[in-house]
Structures are given as C-alpha cells and as structure tokens.
Length: 317
Ligand SMILES: [Zn+2]
Image 1 (cartoon, helix red, strand yellow):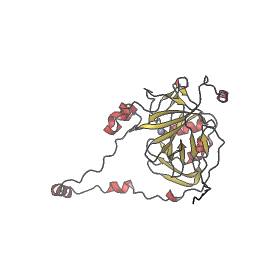
Image 2: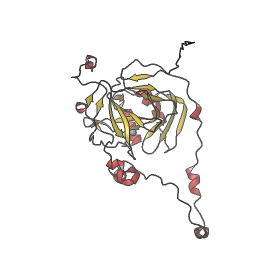
Image 3: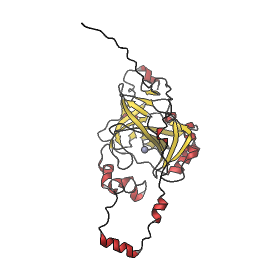
Image 4: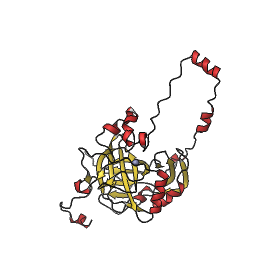
C-alpha cells in the first residue's frame, strides 16, 4: 500500500549582490524598491515646545502646593562629544550606562597590524543584499548618518543582519600600523536578536569618489532633522573596495555606551576620495574619531591566509 511521492521543490531565493570571501562576480539584485516606510514626516517643532514656559508665579506656587510634581521624564543620556570634558577619555564617567567605555576589554576601534594578525582560510565571508534607496540624511550632532529603510541586509553564515544606517568619521577610527586614514565609513547592521555587525571602509586620498559625490551636495544644515531626497538614489555597495578581503575581530560601538559584542569587519583595501572631498567632509564633521583601544586578549583575524599558508592564489596580493 505504499505510495511514493516525489516533490519538486522550487525555491525562490534572492541572489546576493556580492559574495564576499569567494569573490564571486557581483550579481545584480535591484529588486523593486520597498516604498512602505517612506512616509514618515511628522515632527513637532522644538521651538513651539519651548515657548510655553512663561507661567505666572502665583499659578506655579499653587500647583506646587496642590500636588506632588509629576514624575520626571525618562532621563536623557548625558551629552558627550570628542573634546575636553565630554571627550572619549571621560565617556566612561559621564553616566553609569557609559561605564563600558572605561571598563570594557573588547573596545573599538583598534590599531590594525597586518603582521600581528592571523591569516585564515575558513573565515565566514558575507553575502550582500543591499538595495538602492532614496537618500535620507541626518546630522545627529556626532556624525553624518544615512538612514536605510528595511530591506537591505548582509548574511554571515546564512544569518541575516539588516543594514540600518551608515555614517562617517574624520579622521579614521581604525589605524593601520599606527596611522590614521583621513576618513572611515561604518555600515551598521543588526540581526533579529539585536546583535550588531559593522562593516568599516577606510578612505585614502586619491581619485574623486563617485558615491560620496552623490551625497555631498545634500549635507544637512540643520541638526537632528532627517532630510529626505526621494530622487537621489544611492546604493551603499558603491562604496565597497574592489578587493573584498577584510580584517575581522570582536569589538564595541565606538561611541557611548560603547557596548561590546560587535562583529567588526574592516576592509583591508582603502577606497579613494579626492583631497577636496575629504577636506570638505572633515570641515563638515569636525574631528569625530575615538582613539584606538587596547587589543587585550583578542585576536585580529584576516579573511585571507598568511603567506606561509599555502594558497598560491592569494600570493598575487
Ligand atoms: Zn562609527
């Protein structure tokens, strides 16, 4: 009475734009733009809020007698910055929730020392499924940030990390053999459990950078206001270097609260931008790079083998 069924299963799978590690040729995945989340605009004017503060003294006293003061709103995290008493040296003391900035042992950024890092042949790469999306920029007071709507992601070992935003630091935060580059870009991803993976791209002086040139005319002039340019479409993967080899280590956010457990991948090859572009970005951002942190017990891995590991393909580099 046995019956045999055979199934042909058809899987519709999105193909990665890039498969980083095996260096496959880029596959194009320019699916339809997810337009769902484009309709957020309502913001209340902070000016209007602040105007309402001229209360009569008498009224004020009455209220104080009648009932206890309403509970204060949840405390805002303290202000932090890059200079003097608000600078990186003091972040860990500015608030209890920033303590990891001082006590953490797995902090970022770090000095990348190729000679002291460990070559690998089996480090998981990442597949890139980014989309071209309308430009959404915000100057959050610490950096220039490009916000990304849901739908762009990477996969590490098949595990999905959604691209949330990318932003810039001048000069670079990571060093190479003790030297900073003029700029660094961080693409920040998060998985369903809140784990963060960051791809870092270093910039060096050279040819004009086309992707950067696309967004630079739109640098926001207001603070903390997202500006949307529906007709300016930028594909984040346009910033990627040709050579997809990368350093990998476990680190932290480079800004308070300096949370650890961040999966860092820093491309080995810096990309180029013109002196004019880099100067303008520095002028716009100011200096917003945290100094390098101790490696402590961590190992810096390379996604490529050491020269003494036999793999002649990589000898070309
Ligand atoms: Zn950053």
